[in-house]
Structures are given as structure tokens and as C-alpha cells.
Amino acid sequence: RPRPRPRSDDDDDDDVAFAPGFYPRCPNCGGPARPAILMFFDEEWLDSAAQSRRYDAWQRAVKRVARETPLKVVILEVGAGDNVPTVRQETEHAFDDAKGVETTLIRVNPEFPLADSDHFEDFTFIPVMTTGLDAIDKIDDAI
Image 1: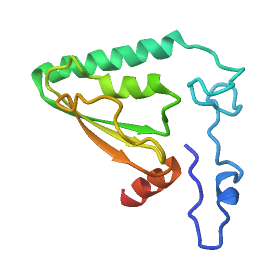
Image 2: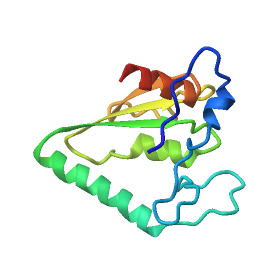
Image 3: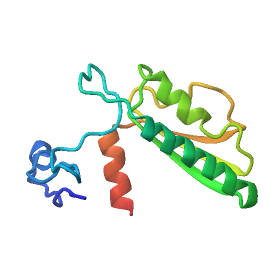
């Protein structure tokens, strides 16, 4: 996967973000890849039943494995503000009914990092009040 070149103090953020070769490419046609998510005013969105099936299968697999071996799952939610409540609800309730799954939700949002619900007995919640890019840069620096 393409990675940005290392930054220097002289770099302009736009120069790094829009450097040639920075964007991911479709493995089939070589065209620009796009995230399989619905974005605001997105006229090119294609719903993917296969993507939903993969997500559901992943959730079932986590729950199945957790019945035998307790699991720790971390969900990193980046940039879902209060105008995308479906994403926020999904991350807060992804493993509500799962026994043996210890869930930690890390919500990165500069304006709305707090939880929407108050059922903290079901998961650990870590609000991070910063931008997505800043959080990802710090995670990248830490690993």
C-alpha cells in the first residue's frame, strides 16, 4: 500500500498529502480506489451487500471465538461527529450481546468525542479530542 514519504519541517502538509503515488489504487482496474463508505453528497456511492455480509461474518466470528477464549477488541472510530449517528451507534453497540468480548471504543473527534450512550458497563470508552489526521500521525509515531 502506498505510504507518504517521511515529513520534514520544510514540508507543506498539502505537498505531502497530495504527493504522486500517495492514493491507493484499485487492484483490478488500476484506477483510484475509494473507501466503501457513504459520504455526504456522494453521487457515486454503490451499496455493497458483500461488504455487509463480511462485516456480519466478522462480528459472528469474534463472538464465536470469544465463547471459548475471552477477546479484547478495540474499535477506532475517527471523525464521526454528531451528524453521523448511525456510525456512532454501531461502534457503541457492536458487541453488546457478546459474552467474552472486552470492547474498548476509541472515539477521535475534535468537536464531539464523548459517548452518546451511558452503558459503560458494556465497554471501555476513550474519547480523544483531536482531528483524525493528528490522531493517526501520533499512532503512527508510536508504532
